[in-house]
Every structure is written in C-alpha cells, then in structure tokens.
Image 1 (cartoon, rainbow, N blue to C red):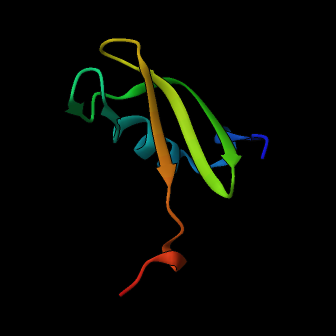
Image 2: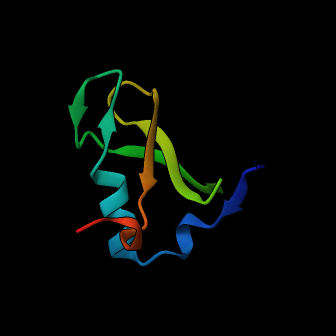
Image 3: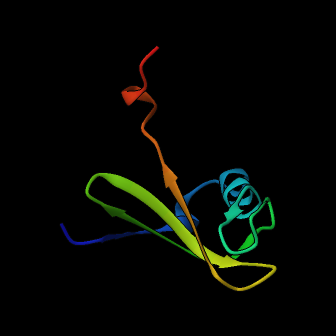
Length: 72
C-alpha cells in the first residue's frame, strides 16, 4: 500500500516536542538526541514520523503503535 502523507504540524505543540525530542538513532545507538525536518505519513495502517538525527543527520523513524492493539 502507498504512503499517505499526514500533517505533523497538525499535532499539538506538546506532542510535536515529545516526538522531536524522544528519539532513537540506530546510527549513533543513543536515545533522545532529537530530530529535525519531521515528516509524517501512514503506511499499511502504521503512522510513521521520520526526520534527521540532530547529532549525525541520519534518518530517524518513530512508528506509532495503536494502544487498542495491545494485549493486557
């Protein structure tokens, strides 16, 4: 299924800040380095926020899980 673009900036300021700060960079192998140039899209029912690591510039990806799918 094709990517469906979403508007990252339609999120609340608080949500935006959390996604921009709470990151994991696979290249740096460090948490919370932050990201720049965020974009948001949906693919195969998964919402993805993607940007560049503030430290190294590599692509950082955050996939949003649907809480309704979690088993308790």
